[in-house]
Length: 196
Image (tube, rainbow, N blue to C red; front, side, top):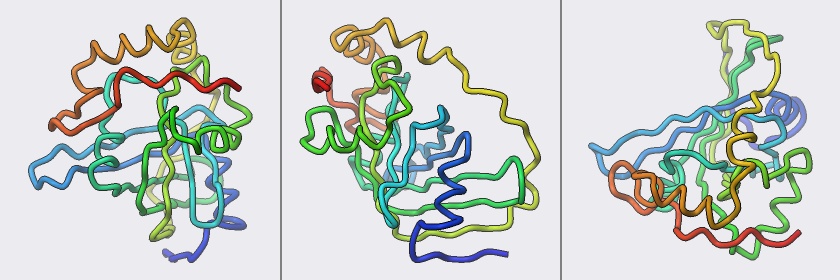
């Protein structure tokens, strides 16, 4: 029914790379803190970097809970479900970190996402996750659903922003610089987008 893997490779890697969406889960250390669960879409916005590491693009939004939790404690779980084809659920449990625009690793990391134009989505960080436990389960109860296409609304909304206006947008949101529980979130003002 389920199996634990030492590495993200072969069939497992192909499964992750071909799914149209996945989910992230994080939580603060405080026992009464707010657990966060987020869906992530847009094909090409996540990548397997090596057998132990995955990364995804963290786009503009109204909150920064994942970033805040990772800055506090690094714990994260990523989950992909098969909505078509053979049933399967893959989870990568590990330690993650947000890599911000002023990090020297930015230029190398952004190269792993050639099919996404980051300028149209208000890219604010690249989340890098180092796997500590990789496992799959049957997914027998996951329904069949059809993927039609990515929505274009996010790109249309944030394509009109530049670094300064995007930073102003985030500053006006109550849970971007600080999480719901008051943890440090996205550093503002945003560092400028590195030149290509």
